[in-house]
Amino acid sequence: MTTEASAALTLGKPRQKRGERTRLKIKGAFTRLLDGRDYSDLTITDICREAGVATGGFYFHYAKKADLLAEVIGEHSVAFWARLNGALHYQDPYSVIFHATTALVAAYLDAPGVVRCFNQLAMTDRLYVDMWDTAARAWISGLIATLSQGGGRSDAPTVADGYSLLSFVDLLLFKIYIERDPMLLESAGDIDEVTENLAVLWYRALLGSSPPAARLAYAHQGLGL
Amino acid sequence: MAERAGVVADAHQSASAGDGAAERAPASKKGDRTRERIKSAFSHLLDGKSFASITIADICQSADITVGGFYFHFGSQEELLDEVMVEHLARLVADVEAALAGADGDAVVAAVCRAFVSAYSERSGLARTFQRLTRMRADYAARWRQASAPTIVQLGAKLEAERPELAPPRARFLAYALITMIISKLDQVYVYKEYMGSKPGGRSDGLERDLVTIWLRMVTGPDAS
Image (cartoon, rainbow over all chains, first blue to last red; front, side, top):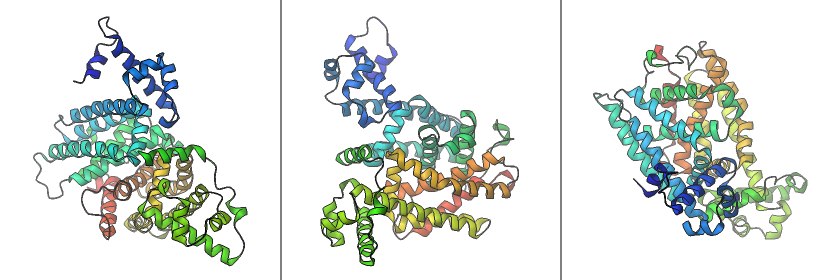
């Protein structure tokens, strides 16, 4: 566990070091501000005001704004991939895909600003592209291994299929929860329905059939199941 | 990092460029030809470089015109970018609409996928730049939404006709999801330059086939499997 993660768990306890508390306040303020504004719009003064921390306190912890960004994105990535890896522990393919979709939706709902910022950085900054790429490949290899258990089918999904479908689910969630495209908002349904419908599409694309109808809560009004 | 900084800086300087293009455009044939040459040179430069790293000097050199000639036609590089993006978007949407209107059943699927693959493979610099801009800038995201909405509605109506059990909003969601699936896959090949599986470049028929396969799997209900 990282120092930051263990610090987060003991937040508010009196023996917490003051410096760590300040660091958490700065990260929390930064995460909140990113929900409403672009990273490039935020100044260190804004972040310090939101956090209730003196500018000197900021520079005690971070040399520059980009260091704070890298730390916050790094922590979110670790938590995100841990959640996705948790989905691989399920036995049946639909549960795996459903819980993976749930983890993706949760990432968008928990910290939309951080996700948006990461998406933008991944368009232009090789460092962040590689960060996503490495983790995604490892996870998808695990996903394909899990889905192929007991299989041996000739049309078993490949890592390439899994990779592009992860990007698909991610892009659609970006359009729902970050861009908030009105057409999607009126057609997609609530969060539970979005999760299920995306899981169904992902499942169908990977496995070539629909998941068992008994597993679906929205079968009667879902995607033509 | 420098590239990202440039892109973001652009975003905040120029939310509403491009309005002056129409008035400034000269009526003469020769002027039109020069204007087209500038746009063509810029488009070719975009195949290899990001728009933020291209200078007006690069464009003039490539189009074999003077800087004065450039400014006779365009008030700024942003204005040029705006015009080529508007044209790219109009052409892509027209191609997809023609594909939708042309045929039925699986032929529609292949035609729509082909329209997207052509846009990305034949005009990769323009397509890549446009996708980046829709992620980085709210005004470009809005343009895409506006331009693609009628296509998605049309595709939704087609899906609904084929699968009467689909409620209209779900048919539209499915249509949106299919378009998003295509874009996410093409982004990987042409924007992120990552494609696990067949290599881009001369293999766009393989890519089209992959897209058609995923599409048909996604819209397939339990009856067809």
